[in-house]
Length: 388
Ligand code: HEC
Ligand code: HEC
Ligand code: HEC
Ligand code: HEC
Ligand code: HEC
Ligand code: HEC
Ligand code: HEC
Ligand code: HEC
Ligand code: HEC
Image (cartoon, rainbow, N blue to C red; front, side):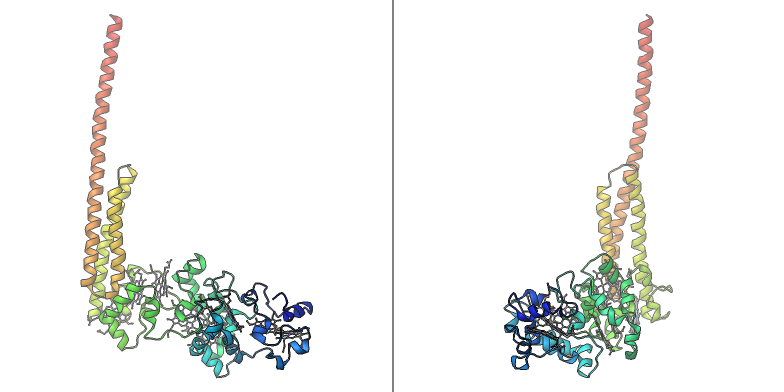
């Protein structure tokens, strides 16, 4: 790059493209402006350097951008010289996306490579300043998808970012910087942006929530959802605004999701009621034991074993809540019962500690009394000896 005439002259002319960064990955890799725009980077004569004869292609139109980048990024021979494992399917994937297909139909407003990556300030995806770094992806998509005017003609909502930012996922990623939580591209793909269809939505969520997916797909209801083209996880949890869950989501109260589709008398309704009761039994036992545990802690007795049992009970509760996705009380029961046994054992142990404490206090009282009497007796004895 040191002898690159394209850069040298453009710096001199103060005609660097908007958003140009010196640490742009292509510049860093020693690729000249000519790598993308063509031309002869060794000539300091503008007419030669930027002549079509030297392969100069100038500024690509939006429609041309994917191929323009794909010249290198789709060529494994070029790319593996720089990164042995870099993917070369971005362009191919892109053309399967809604963005790519609309672009081919002539739509000028969809995202192409530059919309998400910029053209002259491209950083590695792993670089925290990159527009496609996980924490920055939602903002990158939001620029178009959150603009109601821009999206108006397409008849799709423009609230994805707002909903997402309020969701458990959005809060985990944007507020707690937990990159294990999904950004837009974890559900929609980096380059193949399409809404996950009926068949794939469970797979998308199941990529991270493995057990929930397996239980759900194997359940009677999972089969029914597939037949009736219902949207899997999304029917109960939503897509962008996935909220923290709680036991009230199952059962027959109006906070339950089950009553949206199951009315009194049908098997789903009965199952909702039963599973809710199983969970309630466990949480009640657990809460009771927890209350006793804090009493044990307050009086300063040993709660190590109690804590251990309670952790096991809590583990069962977590697993039972995942087993809800079997929608089968017989599969949930072993876990909730196991948890109840542990919680009850913890309760018994706590009660024993509290009793022990009382016994000790009584013993201590007796001992104090005895010692006091002894001291008093000694006192009189000494006085008696002194007067004598
Ligand atoms: C001696 C100076 C000089 C050199 C060398 C030079 N440029 Fe330019 N370039 C300019 C100037 C001045 C303009 C703006 C006027 C114009 O379009 O001719 C320009 C315009 C451009 C444009 C915008 C064209 C458009 O249609 O808007 C691109 C892209 C470009 N240069 C890329 C390159 C590349 C790639 C090289 C190296 C192969 C290069 N330049 C070499 C001076 C130079
Ligand atoms: C990674 C490929 C790539 C590299 C490397 C690259 N460009 Fe570009 N350039 C593009 C694309 C794509 C566009 C059109 C999209 C846009 O306007 O942002 C563009 C547009 C331009 C334009 C016209 C629009 C504007 O912002 O003024 C100029 C001038 C330009 N480039 C100059 C350069 C110069 C000078 C260099 C080297 C320092 C360079 N480019 C390196 C991809 C590249
Ligand atoms: C809708 C936004 C979007 C568009 C359009 C887009 N990308 Fe990406 N791209 C991403 C995201 C997000 C990542 C980051 C993936 C990650 O975190 O690993 C990425 C990653 C990359 C990477 C790093 C390697 C990889 O595959 O993960 C390359 C190279 C790349 N994109 C090139 C392109 C090219 C070429 C195009 C045009 C054909 C393009 N991108 C279009 C969003 C986009
Ligand atoms: C002249 C060949 C060439 C062209 C044309 C080109 N790139 Fe690249 N690009 C590379 C190379 C080589 C690297 C890898 C550099 C490295 O890993 O050190 C790279 C890296 C990238 C990365 C970072 C990948 C990562 O590791 O995260 C992105 C994103 C990217 N390019 C996007 C684009 C986009 C968008 C365009 C079109 C505007 C484009 N590239 C055009 C050669 C090219
Ligand atoms: C340059 C603006 C722009 C950017 C940036 C952008 N999109 Fe889009 N996107 C559009 C437009 C316009 C459409 C077309 C809407 C349609 O046809 O329904 C679209 C369509 C989509 C669709 C298909 C919607 C449908 O109708 O089925 C998805 C999914 C999508 N984008 C996801 C993303 C994600 C994820 C990102 C960020 C990684 C992103 N987009 C970035 C403009 C953009
Ligand atoms: C947890 C997974 C997930 C995340 C994260 C996610 N989406 Fe979606 N998205 C979905 C699902 C599922 C659908 C709906 C599919 C359906 O019902 O047809 C969808 C639909 C869409 C659509 C089509 C229009 C609509 O609203 O139904 C767009 C556009 C879109 N998402 C953009 C985004 C953007 C932008 C982000 C980031 C701010 C994002 N999505 C984050 C899963 C996700
Ligand atoms: C990239 C991995 C990933 C994907 C994909 C994903 N999630 Fe999550 N999900 C997480 C993480 C991590 C958390 C924990 C966030 C937190 O609370 O810190 C979470 C939390 C949740 C919660 C709240 C759990 C609770 O304890 O109450 C629900 C419900 C959920 N996700 C459902 C879904 C659904 C439905 C989808 C698909 C539309 C999905 N997830 C896609 C990683 C993912
Ligand atoms: C028919 C409704 C329904 C469907 C479909 C559904 N869930 Fe749930 N989900 C629930 C209910 C109810 C709870 C709350 C259980 C509790 O806390 O008692 C829950 C809890 C969760 C939790 C938090 C508890 C845990 O397991 O960590 C996650 C994560 C979750 N669901 C993910 C998913 C995923 C992923 C899918 C799709 C494969 C899915 N759910 C499908 C109703 C559903
Ligand atoms: C989006 C609608 C929808 C929601 C929400 C929903 N179900 Fe279902 N459920 C169905 C459909 C459709 C069937 C299949 C038809 C049938 O067998 O009754 C089904 C079947 C079932 C079955 C199998 C019944 C049988 O005949 O063996 C059970 C059990 C069940 N659901 C439990 C639940 C529970 C528990 C919840 C709440 C956590 C719930 N469902 C929420 C739609 C739903």
